[in-house]
Length: 236
Image 1 (tube, rainbow, N blue to C red):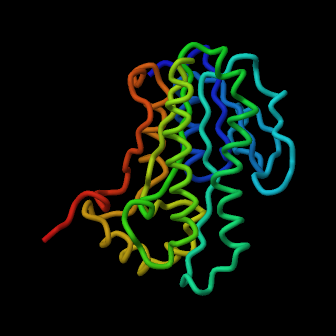
Image 2 (cartoon, rainbow, N blue to C red):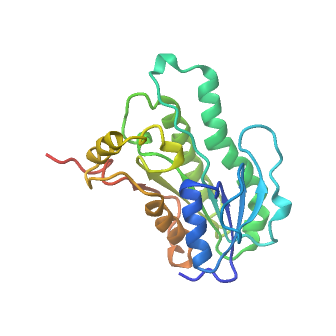
């Protein structure tokens, strides 16, 4: 895939899936921009400090006039019994996963419209389609992300802006460190997936990069499971 001459914003490129996406885009020749709390390790990324939580303005002025791709990676994992969730827990998950994406996309939209065939990629979770205990807050927030992706795909199809969403299962990122912090937890996570392992950031980055590319020019409005078979396969 050739991204030479293309500008892509990866929100949250400092770690995890966002860092893997940014690395693959740089290898493919893209100019990568990032908004995140922490500075990315890759020196080639043009970085602006930004946090999805709060009222900090989106630093859209740091972006070029044309934006060919936008990837929104910030997420959260807050798991506990439903009766222990406070309203503030739901509000925080919604702010990080949904409102943060809304704010960035809204501000970047004029630049996306100027590019020929821009692409937006968002992230949901397997827990939005497969009921899992203790996931009420994040499943609700990511379900909203899926609805946002489909609505925007319909609204901006005429402007040739594609919008798709990936729904991963447990992935080995810093965000999931509490769930994969010991060899025993990793083994248990591996066994939950039909393919026998948890996800790696590169698994998500590969499909994200494809969806940003011209080769995916006829794909929009999709929620694609990248979950080791968890949502669609049952081993008997």
